[in-house]
Amino acid sequence: MNNPFSLKGKTILVTGASSGIGQSTAIECSKLGAKIIVTGRNEERLLDTFNRLEGKGHIMIIADLLDEDALAKLVEACPVLDGLVNNAGYTIMVPTNFISRDKLMQVLEVNTIAPIMLTQQLLKKKKLGKGCSIVMTDSISGVKIASPGNVLYSTSKSAINGFVKNAALDLAGKNIRVNAVCPGMIVTHILDDSAVSIEDMTEDMRKYPLKRYGRPEEVAYAIIYLLSSASSFTTGTSLIIDGGFTLQ
Ligand SMILES: NC(=O)c1ccc[n+]([C@@H]2O[C@H](COP(=O)([O-])OP(=O)(O)OC[C@H]3O[C@@H](n4cnc5c(N)ncnc54)[C@H](OP(=O)(O)O)[C@@H]3O)[C@@H](O)[C@H]2O)c1
Image (cartoon, rainbow, N blue to C red; front, side, top):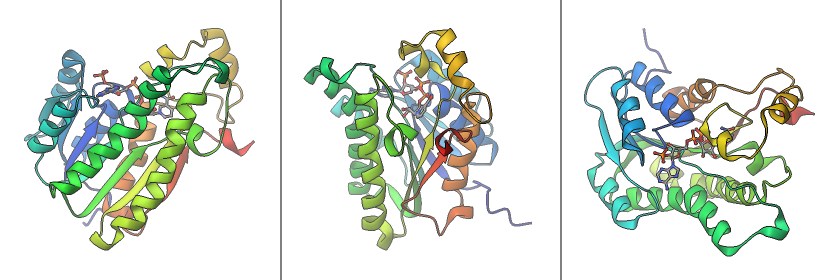
């Protein structure tokens, strides 16, 4: 039986695969038959992801996406891709009056510049095949909400929202689709850097209509939809996955 959600025969690069949403995405994609290229900085954690992939033929590449040489080597090492998941991300919590150029650049470099330049270089080297699907991990902070201390992160992710729409238009002629997932709070290591106490998080979870934060695989399944041929007429969209948080 034809399964439009199958990833059999597809080759997919997942950035930020050493942790959280990226790790879950890589593992779940492998279960659906994809060959995965996992990349991240932390060798031990990336190897853990790599060892948990199902099937054969996967590739693991250590790369800091802020290092231009490492980025070029990653692009060089990639075969032609059917899917690209630009997922690596980072946050620094700071109120607007304490923004510094340094902090702004740190967040923009990881969340905005690196995924855009990786996409551009893969395109230039003809590594994104016809029918390729690009999925960006955006955030509800990039499309819907503001929250205290989140100005740098929200700014970096809002730029991704613009990129998705414009790149989708530019690349439609090549039958390359560009979409985003926009998660609400998902339990991953990124929350370790958010400077929010456990008590505040527990209180915050109560504001979610589904009364909890999300799990990484709940974002991975949406990414899989956007990578698969089940979404072949979907491009330029940003799919909110937030337990109903932004409905209120
Ligand atoms: N968790 C949430 O609540 C939430 C909500 C909305 C959106 N998101 C977005 O989801 C994405 C994944 O986040 P997560 O929650 O899974 O976070 P995470 O567990 O902290 O994982 C972040 C990943 O990004 C990688 N990374 C960071 N800087 C990098 C760099 N310079 N070069 C290469 N890789 C780098 C990390 O690699 P190493 O560990 O190897 O350094 C790690 O694999 C991010 O884009 C984030 O903004 C998360």
